[in-house]
Length: 241
Ligand code: HEM
Ligand code: HEM
Image (cartoon, rainbow, N blue to C red; front, side, top):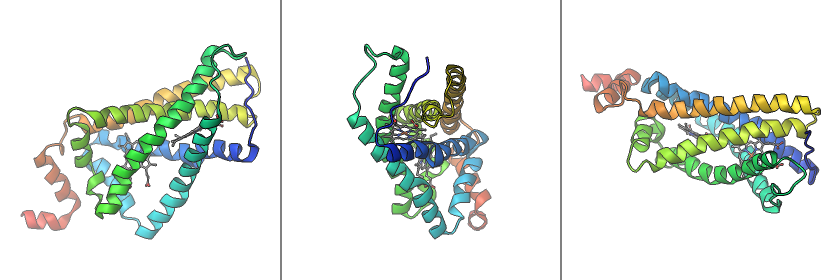
């Protein structure tokens, strides 16, 4: 059955919808792909961190504010506004039950992501700027955090990745309808299959990134860590010698 998406608050709703795909959705996909470099070992992940840290500080900050923070804050705040105005509609609706459940789940995943991102961004980028050092976001810090009992961080990240992936994948399907890209039932069904594949792929990439912090490999132990630093900092090689 073809589904029509409501058009209340037209311009802001359209902007909200677009911001979910670009830049927010695009950012999250490339972010998880880059994080999955953990599967190549600590040096590969730290090299990604090093790449961003090697950019001129003001340029990095402007890029973060314009390309990530402003669109994300707009999407998050307007998203909460949409949720606060929504009525639960998956019981006794003219639409299929599962269709409406999926729609409701997208809104709940948005609320979860709001809190997840407050914790995540404060403890990564926020902590980096406050401490004045990128050590807090390097491989060793992640390994320590995710492998510590009772594994609250690990559970939070497993859920955070799945929620972001579901929210984005279902969003792509909804976006295609809202923007008139998929009109026929057949087209909507095809995009639904694509969105499902996207959900599985992005979740696996994100979980792969997490696994990369946990799988024992060269560089995870204290000895390995110093090898990583020696490779990336010639001056400490001199001191160590
Ligand atoms: C595998 C799980 C994840 C890992 C290892 C991870 C890692 C990181 C790291 C290292 C940073 C700091 C970047 C910097 O300041 O240079 C960061 C920031 C950030 N992450 Fe994640 N992240 C993960 C999942 C997510 C998810 C699921 C989302 C979206 C829902 C997300 C959104 C963000 C945002 C918005 C920032 C702030 C970016 C900035 O201001 O530069 N992350 N993350
Ligand atoms: C930070 C907390 C977030 C909140 C509160 C939130 C909230 C929402 C809500 C309520 C909707 C449904 C809008 C509607 O029914 O018309 C939505 C749609 C969407 N969101 Fe989010 N979201 C958040 C984060 C994210 C993130 C991190 C991404 C990317 C991974 C994202 C991507 C999308 C997409 C692509 C849509 C579909 C747009 C459409 O329906 O046309 N959102 N968001």
